[in-house]
Image (cartoon, rainbow, N blue to C red):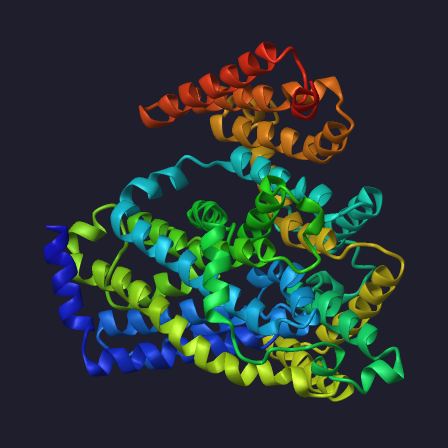
Length: 556
């Protein structure tokens, strides 16, 4: 049956007209993603009117192509200029931009392209094979689970803060505070507006993001007149040619990072409201924690590009899973896709795949084909984008700032957003100067609203706090949030050979197995038993070694 559906979908998609539309869609998405402030959602919205006269499978395939292209397009601006083209490529700048500055923009872009490709392919395979099963996970989430998921994500501020954790926590708290400006979505009350109508709507996230990352970076680049006259090429040996072979070798060496980050992206995608802005930071954090050299993150290493790019391309596959199986849009772009389905008199439901198999599998296959097109088209377009490195910095800064201003203003046509760009650009410049990391602040701005909204919903259902401890997903994320927050302390004390660090991994395994058992079914309790046994084995092994550290064992 599945094979028949795939063949039927290929029959309607594999023709010159459909391929041309998808190629145009991917190209448009790549360009939109590379322009700071021009979001993927905006690109998909602009595509929607052109699909009105198309058959359903062609219109949806075109929109999926724009979506796939936009997800990958953000890496070009992020790596070459340090400005994330989209919110889902924020973490890519942490190592992509330093690698480009170190004289290897071709390698950084190559790693980004192939990581995006691998993440998209893994997501597409899961989309075609496990859509109904994975969608059921999204139904298990409730406000308590969402809130603890955000709390877990916020613990990443400790990891992103680097060596100065206090400054990182201050930056994260400032981001959360900024998110409280404006009207409370749950209660409808004005907060911190100081009687101003423009502040009633709060600070636009895109304007804050571009101001903190883009404007502050541009100010830092042109502060020295001599440096401002130089291009990136003159600052180091730049290989303009994209190094595909070397990039593939680097990714092959780190295939575990690709798989883990892609699965994080798919899982985050099936959670309504989470999206790529959370997934790319989560994947980056997990790659850093699992790495044998976490201190190198932020200096321009391959792992720091592979993780976020693999995850953000896998996100939309997860979002399409829950959209098609349950009719629940996981993010703004998925909501637009839902509108396109409804316009064609198609109502997503658990029976959608069986009732409309050709249309459903045409969406699956278009996602798959668009990912391959993205690889080829992005490789071609990157040759043009890499030449940006040859432009003098003062000229490049002026052009980029102009595009940023146009992009920010075009979102809502509000002049106040331009002032937001200016103020947060100056704030970001001062934070860079005094050693405050920007990433935790961005994370606070992204997650603050989600945390507050779900906490309000949870307390509106019941003021009792026990569901936070008794609901399986809530307890699961609470446990991993605690161990995630303790991880930087664990790393520091492990190097000092503190005795308690021997129990960190076994304790984490024992704790995580509890909510997995509570979830019921067959798969997850079985997984809980495996995790528990692994923790017991680790504890037994440490006892057999006389509670000694590995370094001590080698010397004795």
